[in-house]
Length: 255
Image (cartoon, rainbow, N blue to C red):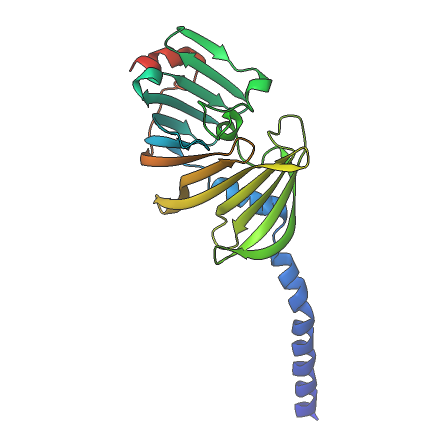
């Protein structure tokens, strides 16, 4: 009798565990926002200094290479100073979350970019000023459309709809890896048509974390493609309290 009772108890506990499995699995599922949060954490280079280049290829076959120095702190503060070619040497931009300032040595003036300028081409590239200025998904309401493979990797397919007037695009679709939450591709849409395609073609390891190294942006309306790539990057840089300030742009331009 005792043995039968024990057997029944074991069977009951086993059945109960099987019934709990779907609940446990469901609890482990991530929401679209949680995926985005993990993805945007992978865009954070910390406190850094580096050099990069942009290669611009146009439909007419023209090719231009722009080289720049970069400084950044988290995802909200960054400075870009161009040093090559010589005709744009010293042109400097400051990105502070939603604000962008520029300094051109030719005029000797610091300008605050108006909102309508932020979506324009940055230095003739396929990237807009806005593409460099903020976290990629901040101004979008996102949902998980489905899961699928891209370039042989299991991905979440995330769709975002603009949630305010600050969004650079009306809609976007992103392929984000399930392992490591790395962005592989983003399609951007305005007025019902795709206007750009971004591909992250190479990642690099910084302090043990994978961060984008090479990004290709295709402007489908202008039939133009720009490749941005870090040439070198140093992490763990200490900055003076007012380093990321518009009053500092002229000094950085001249250094």
